[in-house]
Length: 234
Image 1 (tube, rainbow, N blue to C red):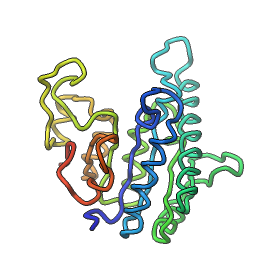
Image 2: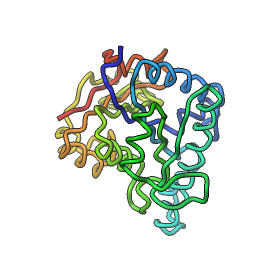
Image 3: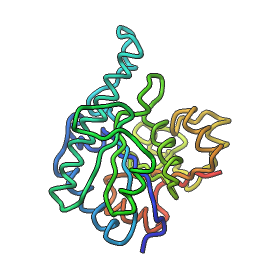
Image 4: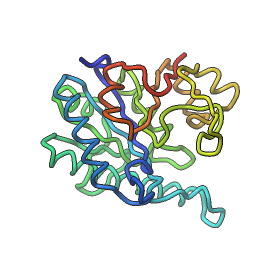
């Protein structure tokens, strides 16, 4: 039984790339689709934001104008959503992709009312293209869209199984947090998500559960309210 009725699922682009670290790993994407199908069949309403890091990380370069670099990143998220949306369709789900700007006939222009109507009809909704503006990350679009559609919780499926006090890849003794307050993340600039998105989540009391995508049945377990990953709240 789902604990959360309406969720926004944030998928890491790098996690969807699997061991290849770039592009798509179809087996990983199909496994995600199968989990999402189960929770939709149980009555959960699912919206999805996907990062673009499996294709582009423009901020690592100082040779490209920042608005142009962010624009390339927005296009990367659209490619990701188009691909994953089609994988979902092959698994028997109905989907729609929304963007904050016109993108030919591949996506729909974002409308809260239309997106919520799709969710209520049992469709999986993808929010691609970020906020449509530079200087805002997919963390910001994740929080913004979750607030707009009045999600119960953001579920952040990442390559790491929660939030640690140091990098677990470098420190074998790193401690994982079971819970964290948004105010602590903001005050101590912990970098769990970017600062602007953290402030927006805190001001609107939007909780987040951050967990590892590659953990067994992690999305299903997160929606059911199982104590996995790190719960971030006011």
